[in-house]
Length: 304
Length: 304
DNA sequence: GTGAAAGCGCTAACAA
DNA sequence: TTGTTAGCGCTTTCAC
Image (cartoon, rainbow over all chains, first blue to last red; front, side, top):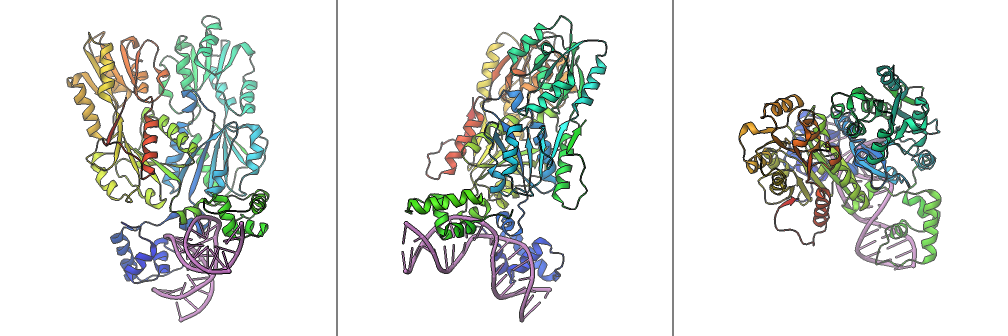
């Protein structure tokens, strides 16, 4: 079963390769007889022809490939590994619906290499949680003009769009639930430190009331060190689920940043913070992909 | 910043494009003067050249792309969406290490389309949880000779390798924990019904003692309908975590199929069933990718 | 040790 | 309405 090319079906249908191409691409300005169109389409069916997208993109200068690049370190704990699983799923689904294909790639958080973008000529890229100090070199090695949406990162740059949680808003909601109490906080770690810092600053509590999640043992220790009966506000439902092992979950308010609020123990309160982060990131990408589109002024998009 | 091609660097270094190609690919049978090699490499640096893999694969007839194709239905619950998140992460990481790039794609479980394999000329494919009745047409539309590893599926076919859990073994371990009790069971759904059936058969209990997870409400109802104090054996740690909401988790034994056993409430017992499913699938793929390699006889690989 | 040139599969002017 | 042909960026025989 040798691979069948456009040439084969041209021969089979007694037309030129150009004609076949016209028909397959529904070229607007080309008029084709119904008769030849049928003959060609029949040949396509008969020979089971599938166009080679690599060849096509070579000439079209568009690959139809979108990259999802996620910074990762070696040996991440499971709750960190899964952090973007939901977004990846959703983005992939949206992109697939639109006819794009998705290239998924881990990037070494310590030594990020984004050669894949240029090598594969990606049409657009979602970049997750990138270290601030690496961003300049990354964006510098970036093929000019490739739409880039940076997620969960605060970086010094006025060129690219960044999607982040509206943590101020979310925190206010969470705090409203606990208005009459002093709370402790557990937040997610990010490789992008300014983002972590910004969240810390917004919370603005003392060091001993705030823990940046690292591992379960430390989390347990932190929770146990809190005064008995204190309330806790926790970012990320997986971390929330772990926390519930070490305290009465009715004392917890979980800020869901991962799209699976059902995992949190029933008595805990829930604030959802991701409803449509994927959708917004996707929409933004679609805007960027068409040059003429009207784009938001602010380079930071905050998702409630 | 126009894209720089091999031609540009050939000109820059005063050599032919062939020479550049030789150097970039370290062609074994070609000897190159150290002097020209340096000149060329310098030009590559200077002009910031990155090879176009689409063009390369067109002539090499290898794309370096591996597909991860996952059957999905619309509106899957979160625990189902995330089912393969861990495996996808691990596979992606292993493949990336080996220099492959990963194309991730959802496949409509009802009307699976695998055109992407032929269009993108994928070098190999991991296919997850495919309906038995669709497998024939899929494998039929399969470009001949593309390595395929089918995961979590029982299909009538002697051609492709299938990786599944060794559910018999795992069940025995779980049952050993509960030797003196009659248990109820909750198992994961699969689109591949023979697989679900096989697990049911192995368990071999009455209908009312077994629930195939569908949604949380039904799960709750099922658990509540069991005699007070009965022990439960549950596949999948997310489902286990949900079950723990509705019964004393010390009565539960969770069979971890997802790589995050930490999520299950502490008092529950745990049996791990995935230690290295990704690694084994990956190794198998690597074997298949080299024609000469020695392959397992049995087409079903059971992962303990 | 290096280069000229054919060609991978496809598209898009331009001719016919 | 259809065909001819020149590339897209790269590899690879074969000649020098």
